[in-house]
Amino acid sequence: MGEVRLKGLANADAAVEALKAAIAIDAHHAVAQRMLGIAYRRLGKGPDAIVALEAAIAIDPADADARYELGSVLLDQQFFQAAAEQLQILVELAPLHPKARLSLGSALMRLGQTKQGREMLEAHHRLQEQAEEINRIRRALRRDEGEACRSLWVLGCGSVLVVSGSDGHM
Image 1 (tube, one colour):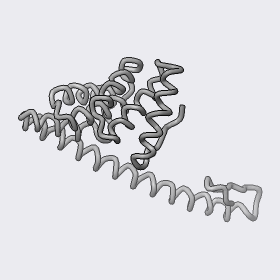
Image 2 (cartoon, helix red, strand yellow; image 1 turned 60 degrees about the horizontal axis):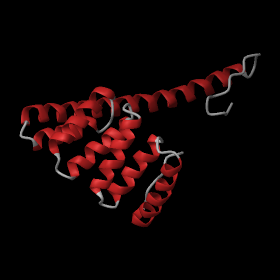
Image 3 (cartoon, helix red, strand yellow; image 1 turned 90 degrees about the vertical axis):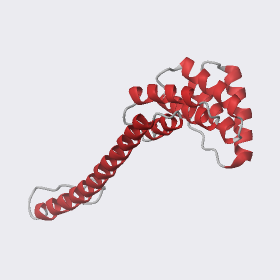
Image 4 (cartoon, one colour; image 1 turned 45 degrees about the vertical axis):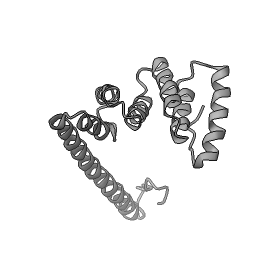
């Protein structure tokens, strides 16, 4: 089953019905359980979302997206300790998850663990800055690679050397 994009509550209602039907056929489909949890959360049905997301994690304990969603809905429902536990597992499971430390920091702050919460929030910001720098370097490398390939092609026109660019142009 592919990823489902939920836009608007009408789509979330339809998604819930379709996902329930899929789960009736295969109750051990972790992605369907996760997507059901996300749809329930979108509809404001936190307790139902928690049940579906816990089912997804029971099927696939390494599903980082299900753990993030469960931690988020637990935060929404003000179950801060349970949220912190799930989000801590997520940080260990997927240390580069883009929002794990941000959400864990929020849960810890709400539990009154301000020092640990602040550390998580600072770690989140450092990871964000590093990700932005990596993306900037990737864009520059792609641009430079394209320029280098075009230059090689121009140099090779008079001889046997013909190199096409990675963008499909020569």
